[in-house]
Length: 339
Image 1: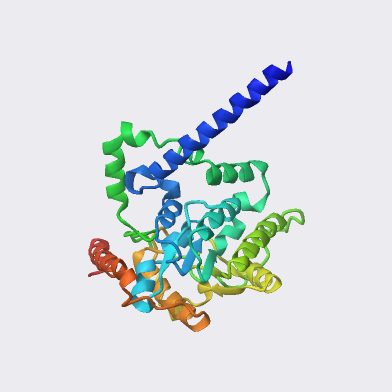
Image 2: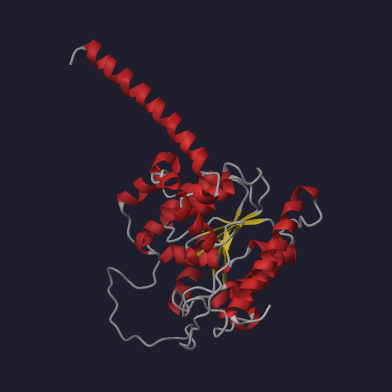
């Protein structure tokens, strides 16, 4: 290839790259508007990017356990904490790293909560180069992250119907109004060893890969003046004593605080006959309110989070809480739990 052709090729690729950045930036603004324009998996992440800068003091990250168990409106009503759920379905730890960078670019939270199921998720357990590549593409290229955004125009009515059925999102949290009891008994007791351990892949152990990503997360947070809190929300399907011990040991090693709510079910008031969404995997709206009331008290005792109730800049939170409580009452009636 001659020098002239090489220069023309480089110039063409450069122009193409700039055009791609422009197109993806435009798409990023479009799909970040919320509602039907937002790809469902990234609704929480796009949502927090639309909040006023430096207005959120608490961010929750992790997988579906995080966004099912913690209710920002409950934290607001009880403690005046301005929080946002940036957890998402099946979030794996490379995504957490990338999305945390985006969040910290706009917000200066006092505390970031990591729901600990993230530490044991399938993609987190073994490093895969595709995980990092996917996380990088999702974070840096809105065209990739919103690759199916065109469907909102072609299938607009279907997307509107889906959004209506999923319900209104409250600072990253959606009410889950169903009851499927957990009846398996005490899941946090010492269990006998019935299966020989595989020394190459021990059960309920936090992998070196996950710890490497955690080092990045902790470093980012500490650089921003943000505390990291590990929280295990109530979930019989995803917690046991072995996992508790693994997280406790890691928390001590990393110098982090750890709250395991699975050991505090009586204090929280969890009743698995009424508070389970899906047989012990997630809590429903009834359980999430109990979890959030307890969490708010814990946070008030451990951290200096400001109470924004009464501040003019947060008036919309009071209005949103009124709508939330109406939805809760309707949901509880539908669940047969009364208003």
